Amino acid sequence: MSGNPLTNPNWADEAFDQINGLVGKVRDNATNNAIVAVRAVVFGMMGLLLGITLVVLLLIFLTRGVQSLLNIGMEWPTAVYVSYFVVGGLFTLAGVFAMKKRS
Image 1 (cartoon, rainbow, N blue to C red):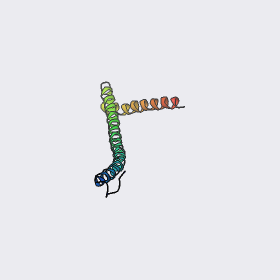
Image 2 (cartoon, rainbow, N blue to C red):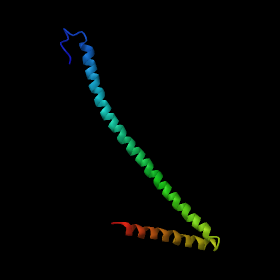
Image 3 (tube, helix red, strand yellow):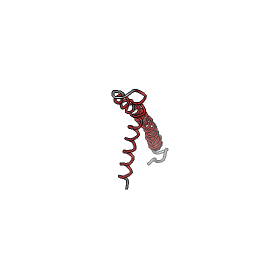
Image 4 (spheres, rainbow, N blue to C red):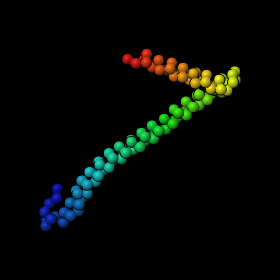
């Protein structure tokens, strides 16, 4: 604890150290929590956008792959329509399975 400035020659240094320590502690608590929160929001948004992009691309690749496989045995316009029914049927089955698994 700081003493009388008239009797303690180190009073200024001790007072500065106490004030500096208190301000540093408050700053660290405030900025560290803010940095963690902002990083969570930024990385969460990046993950969400990348995840949505990945799902859309996978759906496009799945549909295009089924179209190419069906094009082996039928004409292209027919293969396109049948691929939509196949992919839609797969998603319907996945939805039915998920609905049966819910509690």
